[in-house]
Picture 1 (cartoon, helix red, strand yellow):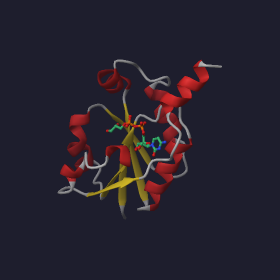
Picture 2 (spheres, rainbow, N blue to C red):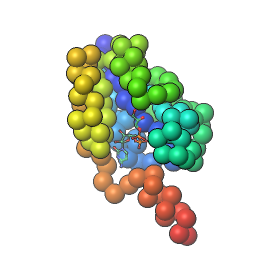
Picture 3 (tube, rainbow, N blue to C red):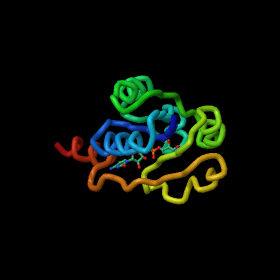
Picture 4 (cartoon, rainbow, N blue to C red):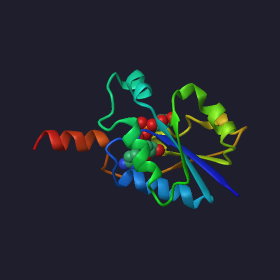
Length: 130
Ligand code: C2G
């Protein structure tokens, strides 16, 4: 078994999110997703996500390509999460390129290209302007 792990907020779920999850899943045969909590988002951005962590976790766990979901409470626990979930590969979008290279002693680290021209921030702006 090859276990893949990835992390994200996945707020206002969109096609860029499913694209990275499907590509991550193809790198192995078991995909685990750490969904960042509302509190973690607040501490990073001083605002809460549009969708609650319960809803975001429900959406992610309903996807065909996802096998397991857990709450990511802190960015500082990444090493512990990788070990706890016995990850073989950590996958992140290339907006994080290089940032997780320090975990190459625990697992393989892969950055995949982001889907162009779509983001939660942009969706929020478009909806606001209507
Ligand atoms: N993503 C993508 N293409 C987009 C938008 C997002 O491939 N157009 C990817 C990001 O690169 C990331 C994942 O989708 O790998 C989730 O994105 P976010 O919800 O923005 O995640 P983020 O807030 O960066 O949380 O521990 C790390 C954090 O939890 C990451």
